[in-house]
Length: 149
Image (cartoon, rainbow, N blue to C red; front, side):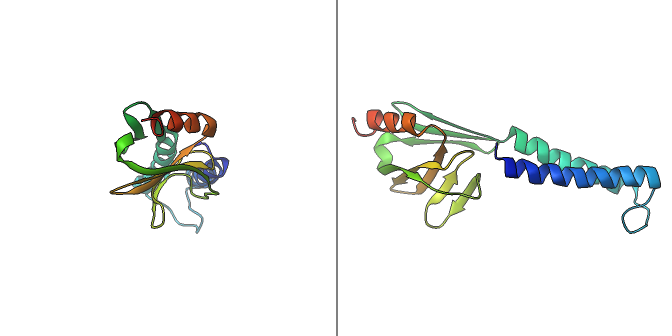
């Protein structure tokens, strides 16, 4: 996840938590003038850091070969869409505010980590969008493997 707005929000949250921890350690009070137990301070520090690590490690890998389209979304799993299972495929431009893995009623599953160009795929069982930052290369791969098979 490389969008600046996601990292700005995450870093701001960690900064607020860090400010609370420093305030508690130096003044021994929270924002309302009351003492906080050590276990709460521990979780107040650990949870934002774990969220940052999750977003840092969160990766979407796609590969295209003669077998089909392979999607690996760490840490959630893998998926293979074979070329012969695809009924319709096209590249579309979309302005997505949420650049992650989510489900849309109109488009099905959306796998996107970066960019506004998406590969729209329709199969017998599902629809999906796969984001790409290399639209010309994907167009070439689709022409090579999907239309020439």
